Amino acid sequence: MKFIVSGGTGFIGRQLVDLLLAQGHYVGVYSRQPGKAARNAVATYLWDPLGVAPPDDSIHDMDAVLHLAGETVAQRWDPASKERIRASRVEGTRRLVDVISRVRHKPRVLVCASAIGFYGDRGNEILDETSAPGKGFLVDVCRAWESEADRAARVGVRVVKIRIGFVLGRNGGALAKLAPIFRLGVGGRLGSGKQWMPWVHAQDVARMFIFAAENEVSGVLNGVAPNPVTNREFTSALASAVHRPAIFPVPGFALRLAAGELGKHMLDSARVIPAAAQRAGFQFSYPDIQPALIEAAG
Figure (cartoon, helix red, strand yellow):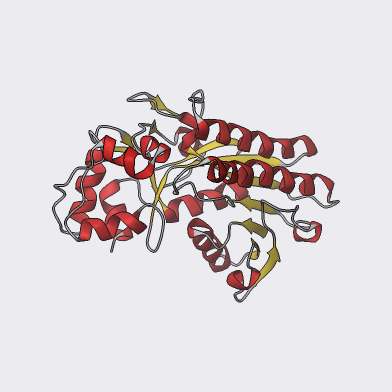
């Protein structure tokens, strides 16, 4: 198949592109810095989701569009950063779908990233792809983001939206800052540690994007492992993976002081399961947290 990938130089995107190439697919990559994306067997196109639409010829004759581009959420929030987070996802997806709508030879499928932020802070409630959205800034962003992706269905393109959880893998993702702290023996739970953390291994979420493109599924897939854990359980598993104790909990008020509004959301609880993905036949390589962390932190 012929794939075009946005966000192809990001943490998940790099693994996705490598996997596509290993499987023998043709791959194009969007980047704000095309030289950064250059590699053998990869076509690169200049595109900034916060700027203009991607070039029409980048999508013409493609079989699948895999859309992951977006401003990082992991930064201190202020009005300017929140607008970049929103615009890069909502307006960027709108521009991409506008091009899909007008090219003559359209892709068969658009697989668009979304996030478990869609569900908000829900305590112990078990959440699957049919669950209602929560409330808050990230919820509003995810709803608008997915709505823009759904516009592609109006021109006959199959649409899949993958709500991604905390991504675990080497050289990036949720462990980029956590693992070094835990290796120093100064890691610990966040707040009470009772909040649920819907996690996924980077290899599995990359495989899920390809699965969604190659199989006749549509709608929402939760990009999370089938066995969510609490923050306390995650902390214990990570400490074990790096062979260090985890005895320094971070109080909730300290998180809010250090990270502002984002710090509050770091204590959100979302017990998300991948019910639709499993019904569709997707098999996780890392369904359990301990083996995933041992591989990712190794």
